[in-house]
Image (tube, rainbow, N blue to C red; front, side, top):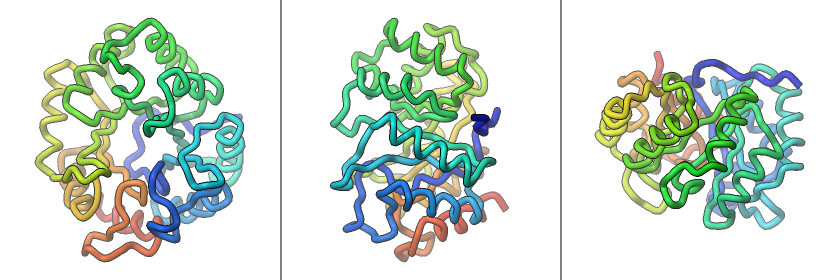
Amino acid sequence: MHFTRPENLPKLMVAPNGARRTKQDHPAIPVTLEETFATAQKCYAAGAESIHFHLRDADQQHLLDAGLYKEGLAELHRLLPEMHLQITTEAVGRYSPEEMTKIAYEVMPPGISIGLAELMLDRQPGAENIRLYKTLYEAGCRVQHLCYQLDDVDLLARLVEAADLAGEKIWAMFVIGHYTGRVSHPDMIQPFIDRAAANGLELDWAVCAFAEQEHTTLERAALLGGKVRVGFENSIFMPDGSIAPDNETRVKAATRLFD
């Protein structure tokens, strides 16, 4: 199957469900594959070039399942052959680094996001980490490295050196704030950029942010030359502070960041 694997990080990615929010938080959060397929089509039509999607079990809990991921990727590719598809390895306190690694090998998706700190608990790239990243890169998988803290950028630099990866066009996601309530703020972006430069990394980076400060933070990211990720994984708010009716409406608002 010939998946879309863009050289450059897509400008606008949608994350429609994430690992935590359920229908109780918002009825338009997709928790089944069928709902994810419908949401993806609407978000693509609204301007999203890529989708970062999570699986849920029958209780709407976060799930890493190779068979379901392969099924979802195949159908999304059939419906939206030009959309870049990204799965997650997120642990959410439920999965071990070994289980995260296993899902990556078993699925070998066109795109994958990996939380560096979740995968490398001792904050040093070990032999198995190096083998995983080399395998993913050689297979053409577009890896987006999640950086929650500035120290994660340092860890990414150590990984790039240890695995002998190309130091330019490394895809990264700067996670500004946190779902637990750590406030997002536009001024939190520049330190990530500066830390990457200090480590000699030429990153192709995006930003995601949370709650009411999401949109102003994304505005700053766009002004600084970055890309953005929006959707109900991060925030259910519109730029005016109202509750978004659905993911695609949030995507439409985000397209204006690049006008």
